[in-house]
Length: 452
Image 1 (cartoon, rainbow, N blue to C red):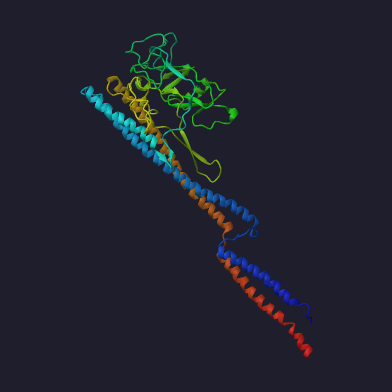
Image 2: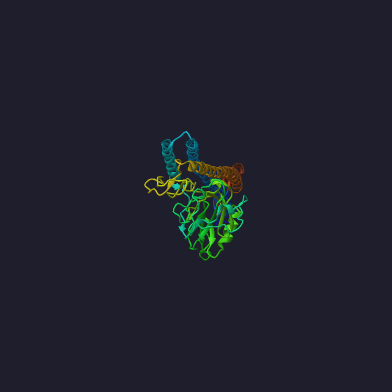
């Protein structure tokens, strides 16, 4: 028997420490509900669980983002519903004005309501916002690049298929004055057309670029409502919202490629610098063609848990100008003075459709029809975006659920199994404590030997 070193007590103490440590771990897991509370609990499991946790939280936020995107689209689409109602009312008034039983004074009264409706379309387009962001104003205006377009061909040179037969019949309005009853659209006799059209209702129109756009980074032009913008690849990839044209690209090739897909709405790019109406009549001869332009605005919605998982929503301007309902004063089919509000506090520079003249009324009906079609197409696109986002929300919800289940398998405590482990280590701890007490009593037997 030895008294200097109580080996049984040391053994009991060591077992008690081990059991106490295991008991504390069980208590920690039971109290937190987590199997991994620190890296030492499971080194690989900790790394995997943290990676999966970022995915779960990212999916949850992406779900919220998608629902915000749905709300934004519903806001824009609700405003366009009002624009649709105003356009339908304008068309109704135009049909009314076209009736021969109405005199000039009657049409002037109808014109007043038309003007106010056009102004309200602009106000609605400018004031529709979501989280203070304009939705129907389009993107940042593109700077001018030096662009002019004129009507360059005699109408008879275009056959029913829209093909130019020859160049012999071509005339230039700057050098030859045609019969105003045959061709209109150039009120100042300059041959320059800004938001212009051919007023005849029998044949097709041919437009020509008389001055090619000047390549300049950030500048551009608009043809048939499609905005083009120059960029320099040496300064980085194009990041705008218009159709990009690299500084060294061939303009003819770019226009030919665009005309093939998706193509201009009203005109076909036939040959270098020439545009031919796709159909006869004033509806087919309508063209938006001007310097600079307003491209759509792109709104990226983060719909995934990782970088660059975006849904790009494109929203074009729905102003009366972009819808073809206003033009510079004096343009055939429109008023002679600026009378349409383009926004609160903004100076009026454009004139609305004219319903006081017989020929202009029928052009107005066709122009309103085209505007209704454009708004309908935009609303259809918004509906498709919304349906897509709703499916995205459902998918994100399922992905979050499955990812959370996988994370739970790694990170969460199995309470039943851990409770059994806690009970075992608790009994062992109590047993080790009792045996330690007994081991500490062993040296007392030495006193019995000494006393004996």
